[in-house]
Image (tube, rainbow, N blue to C red; front, side, top):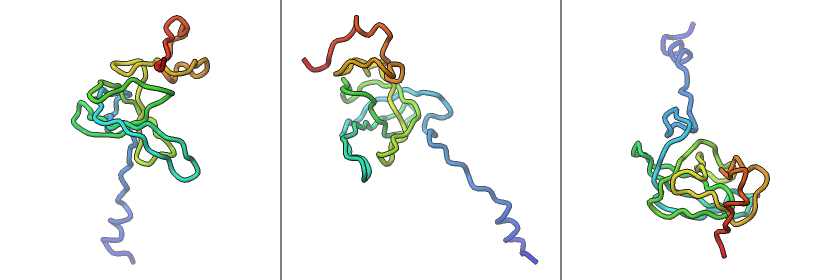
Length: 133
């Protein structure tokens, strides 16, 4: 026969961890860039990943990944953070939304596919100005 402690132990359920818990059940949240750095991914991959440390308006700090080629971010830039992890960079569970607040969508190269992912408008030819001249 099982003891009271064994029965209680079976009934206890584990807490579910939420990967986007710092957004507090919101699709996006505003934050301020504290530091920009370049990290290397886990073993089979070797490219350089641009990563940003952000202070959220809620007071928490988190690490997010920059999408696309080229960026115009500096310290104390306002950005919009959404969920979505970088599989090959440990500890990165968030992405930044391009084209909102101080994070411009203009990139180094022409992008025709997956525009909406990177916040590029459909008439991008009229706006296109490369970051590097």
